[in-house]
Length: 436
Image (cartoon, rainbow, N blue to C red):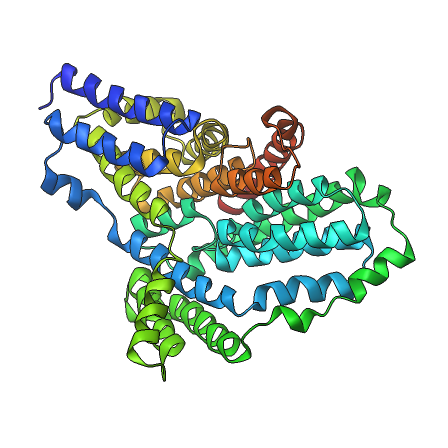
């Protein structure tokens, strides 16, 4: 049994780690690893228990998808889709805003929201420059649409990857339970974007012609690689769908897909070129995120080991008063605001063991599934709650800043908080109507 001193020490280490993550004074991977090392030095964890706490299925899923998408991006196929769409709406800025929002949401669902904004922002800046329209609404749209679209699938947003891996949920579980509400929220976002910005956007026929004159096919640098990447992406998604029937973990499917993608990418090349391309492909993986996740798993496990989650679990049970519907609503709103303040990845990592601890009190896993979906919806929609709530938000702000466009923390809140509140309110209605 852990003493109160050890419990307080675990809580202190976690709080300091989260404060450092919030202030971004240190790299997030460094913070997570240092926090884990402190847990080991404090005797809360051992090296063996820290390693055992890491969810390697989540890491494998992330590494595999980052590799496949990173190689696919080199072909220019995603850029082609974005430019082609801009031309299909005739360079009309009002329609372009809606088209880019839809593309961002769909890409986010199947590529993940961080990759999506890295692909979309340069194209948004290029097209808005040609049309001479304010890029700011398009950049805000990219953040909001990526977080909403990413909510729809297992691989779309890191909180879903964490939840899916912890509960061994399938790709279709997320599609079936979350896509309907994501579709509704996206419809509301499109309407809001049009009312707020779209209908006021104007450009000249000459500037629209500049967009129409862009050669979308020039974005595709390697046709052969594009077809290989497209084949592997489709094959992996089919693998995710089939996973629940063949009982193979999503991480194994993603890593298998990545290995085949690397083989297709380098086949026929001499040894030197092949090895160079493989090293290049491994550099496409965001290792900072991978090590951040690894450290975060161990940090939260240290909190669990020290018994610090037990009082929180008791408080949650008492607040819900035995009602699963009340528990789902508490979790939904707690996740939305908690994610907006702490960031949705650390928040979900902390909540997963807590919900697991209270499942028995509410009748087991099956009865608690609406609460798990509430955690997913609250955390993903809460990712729109502030500029630091999700990784995609920080990336867009950084890329915009390099182009001299400042997305300030306070100004972003004007658009972020209403979006988060409306989407979470719609999610509450959906959860209640569907499950209760």
